[in-house]
Image (tube, rainbow, N blue to C red; front, side):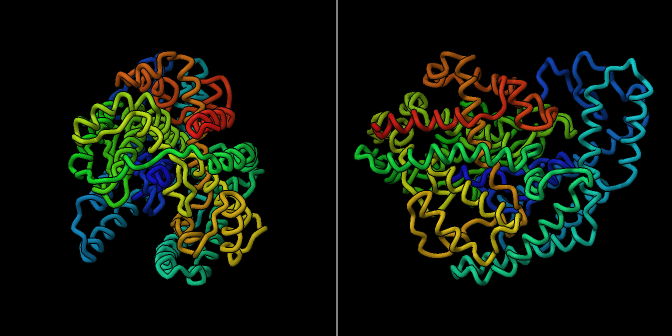
Length: 569
C-alpha cells in the first residue's frame, strides 16, 4: 500500500532535511532508502534576494545589520542548493538511469562525493562561529524585531550541535553497517529466515542507540528512544506517543473485530479487470492535477515504488506504478504522492530550514488528507465516476459500489497492503517492538515470536513465515529506528485537520463533488504549509492553528463513523 512507506527515501529525510534543507524523497517507498532523512503565506512576507529568507512583514532584516548573519545565509544557501542537486540525481537514479551494476557503481561514487562535500560544509566549525556572532548581533540590537532570524539560528544551532556530537568514526561505521545490513536483510527475506539477519539487526540497534546517545544533549532528560524519534518527529516524546497510540489501539481492536464479523461486506469486483496502463496514468494525472498538484513545476513518472521528490519548491516530482489487472493502487498512490508534492509546492520557497517541512508526521498528514479524506470519500467518487467511465469506457459501476470497494477491509500480513482501518495496528506493533528493544525489554532474537504473537492478538492473523512477518520492512536495516510511529501520527493529524477544515468550510463535500479543491488546498496552506519549521513540534503547530494539540479522538471518530456506516454495524 502506497501509504505505507511514503517517506523513506531515496536519499532520505532528516539529514537531508534537517542538515541541508534539501529535498527529501517521499513515497510509498519511503520504500527504499539510504535514510538521510529532512510556509509563508503573503502575511509571512515574500522571498527576498538570494541571500535572505522569508520574513514576516513586521520583522526587521538581521542581515542589514549583521555581516555574520548575511555570510551565514550565503553558506546555508550553498549547502541547500547542493542538497537539491543530490535530489535531482537521486530521482534520476530511481526513474531514468540505466539499470546495470556499472552505472549504479558510478552513480554511487557521484552520490558519495556530493554527500561528503555537503557533510563537510554542514559541519564546518565556521558555521557555528557565524551562528554565535549572529546571535550576539541580535543581542546588541535590543530594539530590533528579529524573531524570524532568531528562530532560524535556533534551528541551525540545534542541528549543528546534534550532528557534531556524532564522531566521524561512528558515522562511518553506521554507514558501512547499513549497507551490510540491507544486503543481509534482502537475503534473509528472500529465504524467509530471520536467523540470517539476526546478528546484523542486533548491530543495527546497537549502532542506532550509540548514535542517539551521542546526539542527546548532556543536560537532556529525553529517553533514548525519544531521542531516536526526534530525528523523524521533532518534539514528540515516547510518553506522548504511548498516550496517543494507546487510545487508538483501545478503540480500533474491537471496531475491527465488529467489521470483520459483519455480513455486509463490500464487493471488490470493480477493482479488477483489464485497465490499460496508459489509461490509468491518464486519469491518475488528471485527478492529481485537479486536487492542486502543479505540473508546471513538477512531473509524473513511473517507478518500482511510488515516491515524491522535491528537488526544490519549484521542481517537485512524483512517481506512481500501475498494473493492468487492477486500477486502485496506481490511482490512489498518485493522489497520495500528490499530497506530499502539494505541501512542498505550497511551503515558502527559501533555501533555509525555517521554511522546510516541519516533520515526517506533518508531511504524512498532507498526503493522507488528500488520499483518505478526499480521494477515498463518497463525494470524490461522485466527481470522479464520470471521468472513470470516460477513460475506461465500459466501467459500469455505481458510486456506492466503487466507494465500498476502495474502502473494503481485509486483514493482511503485509503493512504496505493494509487498508486504512487495520493499518494503524501494523504501526503500533512495530513501534512497541522497537521501543522495547531499545529499552532492553526485548531481545532481537525474540522478535519473530513477539511479532507473530502480536499479529494474532491485534488482527487475528496467523503469520506463516518470516518474510510475511518481521522481515517485510527494510527500516531497521537502514538504522531508521523511531521512524515507524510517524505513519500513524500523520494519519491522526490528517483526521484532525479534516475535522477543523469542515468547520471552516461547511460545503466541503459539495466542493469535492464538484471537483473544486482550491479552497481545501488554500486552507491547508494557511494552517500547515506556510509555517515551515517555525513551530517546535507538530503539537505546537496544531495548538496554534487549530486550538488543540494532536488529539486521536478525531481519527477514532472518523474511522468509527465511516466503517460503521459502510459495514452497517
